[in-house]
Each structure stands twice: as structure tokens, then as C-alpha cells.
Image 1 (cartoon, rainbow, N blue to C red):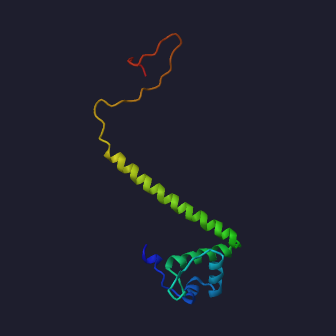
Image 2: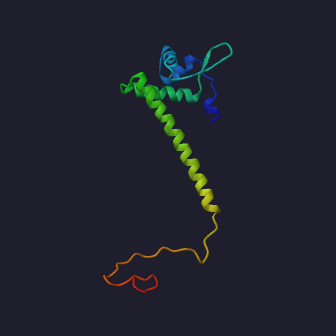
Image 3: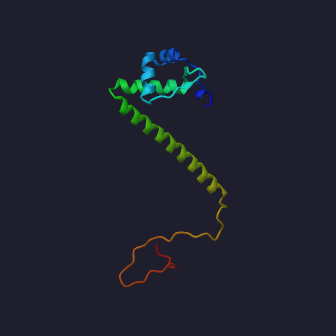
Length: 130
């Protein structure tokens, strides 16, 4: 995961990998769709994650989506990833709690069966009828 966010590609290489023109990458940056890293000299550096983002943007533009629509879709996808991660974390926590609970002993509570009550008869939990 760390390697995925290590910014190593200059703009020309990133553009070629994404199948886009370098000027398009600059436009996407100005519009806030992508935020490449910068060197101390101010040059852009793109990571593998940035390239994946550019490919996703290219997919969305190919189906006719405008820049604002792309921004909203990408924000929603980001929220979905965060919620999925949170759900997995909570499930793991629940599994841990459930595994820590001691197995119930002989005297655990058991649910009563529901039965039809005949008019005039009182139901009893001790009767043999089902």
C-alpha cells in the first residue's frame, strides 16, 4: 500500500501511463480532481494511486460525465471505501467480542415455543403439548 502512494512519475510519464495529454493532467489538478506530490523544486510527481485515479477519471469522461459529476462520483467512491473499511473493522471487533464470550452452560435460557391456545384453556409452559 505504501508503494502505491510513493510519487515517482514525472508528468510526461504519468500522462503516458494514463493515456492522457500532460495538459489534461494539469487541468485535472486545477479542477481539484487530482493532487500530485511536488518536489522541493515544485515539479509534479505522480504515484501509482494517482495513475489509477487518472484512469478512473478517463473512464468517467469516456461515458460523457463532466468534471463536476466526476468530482462527485469520486467523492462518493471515497466515502464508500471508508464505510467499507469501517464495516470490516466493526465486524472484526464483533467477532473478537463473540469469541471472548464463554460458551453457555447447562442453565442457559431457551426460547419458549409458540403454540395455539384453545378458547377457555390457559396455556402452561409446563404442558407436554406443542
